[in-house]
Amino acid sequence: MKNFNASISIFSAIILLSACNNGQQTQSANQVQDSISKQELTKEKKQNILFFGNSLTAGLGLESQNDAFPALIQNTIDSLGLNYNCINAGLSGETSAGGKDRIDWLLKEPVDVFVLELGANDGLRGIKPEATKKNLGDIVDKVKKAYPECKLVLAGMKVPPSMGATYYKQFESIFPSLAQEKNMILIPFLLDKVAGIAKLNQQDAVHPTKEGQHILADNVWIHLKGIL
Image 1 (tube, rainbow, N blue to C red):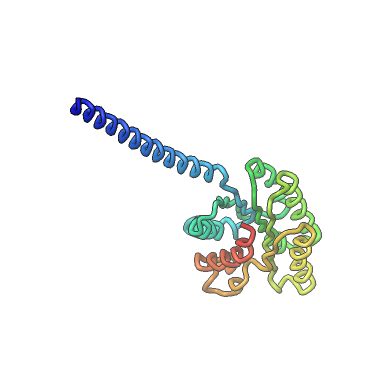
Image 2: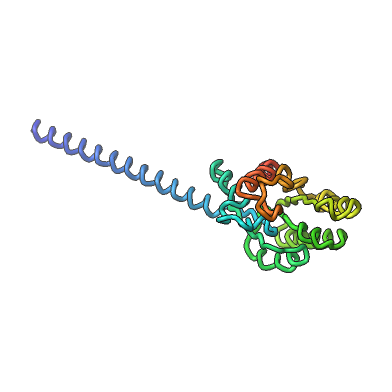
């Protein structure tokens, strides 16, 4: 009888131990599943930063678009573990009028942060500053209408002094004025510390080299990081 009771006790202990192990395995499996679910949720919530510009954004003349400042900013974002996806929508030769027509199809995808870098080609062509400002404003209005909660950033630009002092001042004033009107974060001058420096520009003296693009990325990031 004692042996029988002992056997029952041992058997009960085995069942209890098995139940505990199964509980721990179930708990562990649940933890793994929770972790996977959180990762999937993080991917689903990834927000888009749309860089909408001309050849400066596109990275004209560089070996790869990965050397252009939007990609460099993506590298910084990834290193910080921030949940944003940078989209390079730069198009070489783009004017403010062209951008106004092109923006519509890009807004088919969600945009959480919009970085507008246009106007330089207008300036080089001597287009009236009032027309450039209106086109840029219309682009911003389209973005705001599609995504009212979208955060807006405007890259300031200048023209060469050879365009004349009056035109130079009128063109430069477009960007701070528009940023204030549309409640945008202003990057005072995208090409700060790059424009006019031969070693940081390609042979055309207009488009930044790979090294110059790193400075552009810094110029943008210092204003962008606060809203991410």
